[in-house]
Length: 383
View (cartoon, rainbow, N blue to C red):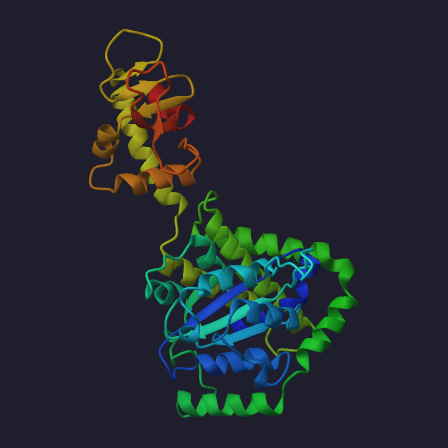
């Protein structure tokens, strides 16, 4: 709930900080508190009627997103969205621009534009909903609508009930409070930001510090750009929550919004099984150990001293045959090991994707190999 409220305050910060929209998806079974969380987040800007439904068309969402520009877009019941189009809608909402269209005379219309944070809910994830019609989710869609398990807290979607006998009674109390108190905090927050634009540099620094600190705590690989993008979304929510607290709008202790954003990111990261530095180091170490022991099995390109058993090498790269790559990494999945080397910046790739590259034209048959930077292996080889 605290993360959702913090996220609701991020709308006015997006244009100031040069950030695009995107947001979170609360996934969980019915009657566990997702709707209450959304009501609380919506109350930052207005009444419950602002809560939108996923039952809409791309052009309809263009108009909705424009109407909520710089504030907060809250959408419920993901299962009502057309699973064939919802992925494109998620992209569009996050990227902040509608479709290009022509006027009746053929001249181009100016597309609608917006910057708006999104909070979504549903009993299924975006990936599950798209899979129901055979659509595959792309990483960009998954990152623009970050999936959070919303029914895994101590009391469904809640951590504490503040004296209520059960989560149902607590939800009813909160729902009633949202009906009586709504639409005040957001406008005040905007007013406070307008008077503090000289602190934008400090706000950017706070985001960077959060990302470095939490990324280090989670042991996020520096090369895992996708995870770092998600981390920045949590950092923005942390900043907005702290600024709202400073403005007297939340009643939370200083640092609470930051702590919540950190905890929720770490939970998301653990659930996603993100890549860590230790995983990369372990994979690269296996490659180092093998090449250092079997250096003579790699033919130096340009020489004819012996035939290449495991591959080739030059001053910059080790070109490792796929069968050798599989053997050196044992029971580990070869593609996963290649991905880890790529995450660390040690693997050469070619346009078109894939982890293997073709040898040069001076290599008979131009075999496909895994090309690993020699600098990643040189310390072990010298030893």
